[in-house]
Length: 86
Image (cartoon, rainbow, N blue to C red):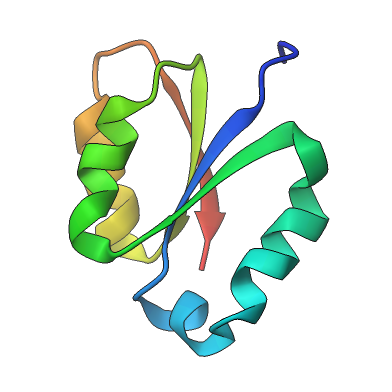
């Protein structure tokens, strides 16, 4: 992995992320430290946020719909998708 921070995009409005509420960002920050740039967004903003990233890999957190949508955006573009199941 390069020295660049990993974009971590999380659907804050779904499932586990929604249940965690304010603790979500704290837990992600503790887990990733300065190795990631966190983007906690609403479900309808995930695809656009994923598309806006210019990185060799992007981590996306959410459920099946969030992950499937992110995979569709990244398909064929050369960016690897890391899955953060939430």
